[in-house]
Length: 310
Image (cartoon, rainbow, N blue to C red; front, side, top):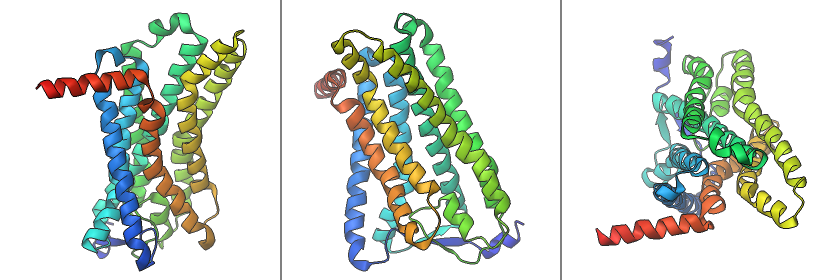
């Protein structure tokens, strides 16, 4: 198998559009998204260093910011380098690595969002036990489990795709090496890997976090409705509204991307959904979660004042 793979040394990334007139606008748009993502999430990481923000919510938010920085870099860098260099080729090993890391980070983001939903559940449904349940040890265990499981779950299908020895085309109809577009150009029998991808990836990585988050919000909404005062209900809802907004946006794009039929008329729309997922959602995270938060603004002002003093 390793000998046969030498026939495929690189793939060609087709990109978002073949229209030459759209290449510069796409490059500028993606570059803007990427720079905002990096700066916004770095801002969150700086703010989370403040001792007053050493809480479970900001601990998980810091993890989410790291994931978003890596997620955007892995998925968007090829669009930027393709425009600058004009070379759409990506080596076989780089493509496999990108495919594996992207899938792992995608599952990791969903897992961290699920951990955040559990944090909101404890805060609203078990407020008197919150500090006892969501202690530093619990947060560390949850985050570690998310990171380890995310990178292990994608390993079996990634290893099988890596050992494919036959491709009828070297052009990947996407703007990065995603597992589904790579499977589509293989001339081998991919029925097994598609089933494995469904069992090992879609259900554990997407559906399981979705169901856990959904169940958490059933209990959260039930607890909020039991609050007698309207101001209390509004305050409780406000504590989880940011998380709920990001969850809805992310799962909407994921389901649109992976559940629509693979016909030519929808492939371009799938790439647009994937672009929104990889470029726009990481921007929304720092904006929705924290940039309107007074504690974060106070922590940033304190960090900037320390930098000026130095």
